[in-house]
Length: 207
Image (cartoon, rainbow, N blue to C red):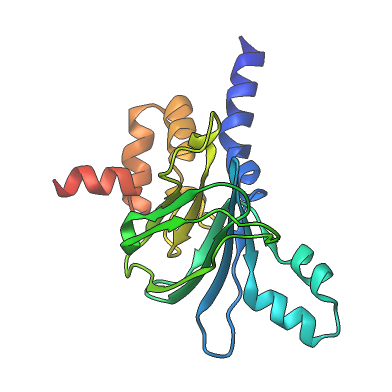
């Protein structure tokens, strides 16, 4: 029994650090808007920070190396509220789609034709939401058995638990669970008296 309790505590406490290791951030250019290249292929998206590519090339790094260093993971965090983002989108193999419901983006991506590496490039500039948001970007054109895996995440704002910012432990629900396990109901009353309630409780109290 003691082992199970220790294992549960380790999972609850260290889970955020695992997710954080798989996150990327976008840099800004002189005009202060994000530039993200999105290459669709079966069955994923490859993402590049175009501002970082330009910065590295200005430092004398060749294009191929700059692109390798500018590749992003499928979760991009710390995007500023209301900031503009430019999306440069293309397909590397088949017909694909790119949907971002929150930004009103809906693209049909043509496959490359003979002797071309990519299909026709499409460029969209949009404003990110002005409130904390988790935005799912996905393909809506069926392209095979792995179609459902074609998606990535944009995290906008700094108020999310896994937004790439240091977490205030007293606002983390995992700490509330552990505290309740060891301190009982009275522990929650004490914690409420010394700090703000977590978001899920605030939403419940505001209803």
